Image 1 (cartoon, rainbow, N blue to C red):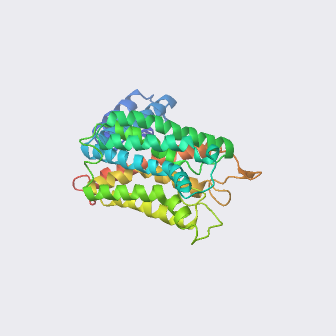
Image 2: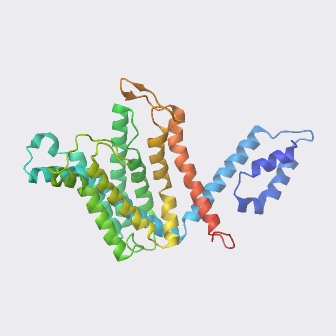
Image 3: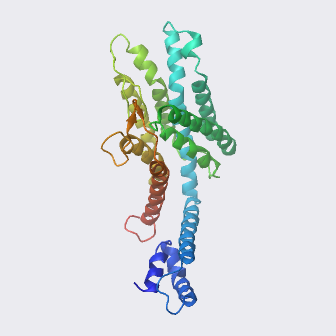
Length: 337
């Protein structure tokens, strides 16, 4: 392969618009600097070109995400995500209160006082209220504390059980302060019609009350001796799983019913969460998967460095792909516009 062909192959790593403007000029400079009998690019030139391509993609991604449609989508995501995380954290405290109201023989010094759950649910509720009131910066600062709490929780679970089953809430929590800190044209509620706000409220109430309804209301009519894993969490019975499914489907319906421009961006923004969910459910199992993990005394083996990098890089890469595909589809004159 000739030297100019190698350089063109490396320049192909740059964004299309960047190549159209600078490729010929860059190729000319590279060939002028090459030795007369040089057949391969120097290592420093390869690293410089690849580093420049990475920076060009980052700048392009930042430019694409800075338009008003993306900013509006970020504000809406901040509100919906904080409500999802509130619903997830509030299920246990509400269940404890329901059991106490039902006369369950619960010791106050035991599981009723679950301060991490109370604290987590309270902070996420505050974040959602601040986001709805357009106090985005204050909401983002509060969300940083809540996200740090989620990261600590995941680290504690991993340290004890080597499990990443509940990693997706930490990923979603990490996205909330980033989404809220963006200066949007309006609040999260501005991009959602009133009836969708009603759906959000219904989704939150159903998700929060799922364990209480399943445990208290159906206690005498439905026996659930076996509690198993559900796609989003562990240790749920059949009635609770059904109610949680309804709640999460209502959250999804809010996103899917938004105008097309907003909906596409919201779906792109949740790609890292969805990919993380799939990887931790399908890819990081115990047998027969491309990221197989063994067990020792019933506890999953620790992640290998390659598996850890996969959990970080694959969601980020697919998010970049989703943004690029969306940009291509909406480009003037494209078939998908």
